Length: 267
Image (tube, rainbow, N blue to C red; front, side):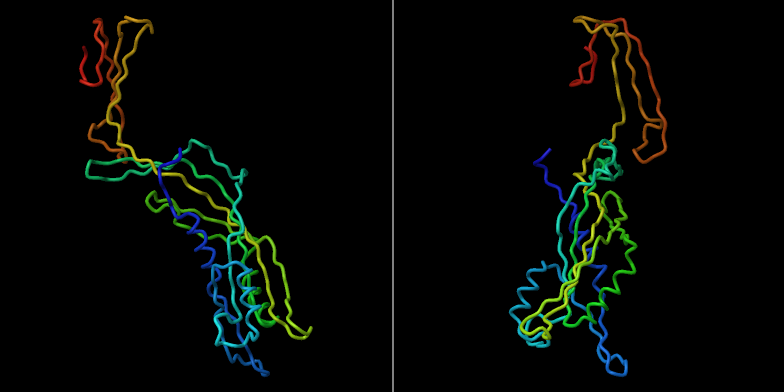
């Protein structure tokens, strides 16, 4: 089971898809007349919340653009993975695809994927409460409570999946430094669950063009064969992705010969 390397980038594709949803959030700053004087695209990065908080604690002035981190800013991270038994598929079901190679056509197949729920946390940090509200209001209306993205999961097998991303909760935190009136940062944390599937390795096998079975009336030693059944596709030039039938040939025997698969002869 283990030892054969495979990697479909399944988790990475989920992370990229999740981040893409929130990579165009903007904040508008207005003057006293309600005119927009500044439009800011909120930067988004894959980073844990603690990293942002640590950096903010080291930055005395949130408006200072000479330092590496300024607000507003957003970040997200994977919080955990859990098996979802409610979406379990039949274990022996397969996906199949015929491929052409220099040796002819081959059949690639994968067993049914395993359902997993991936938990994400999305963080927003703003210098004002108004900035935080603008970010949250651009997100919440699209989750009722889920938003579905389509992911090209296994391109070589032609497999695409619709992945629902469910908004579970929204929490709010207002941190301070110094006096009560000195607001440090406004932080919203949104927890999501992506309901996805993880796929196993792709197995490649040659297309079977003929099957042969010898039948016996008894399983004892020295028992003679009674008949042979040979099944081939009709037409014989058919491949796995063609429309074809089968031709069955049944032969009977009275000799005591046995088929030798090494030499492909009766001996």
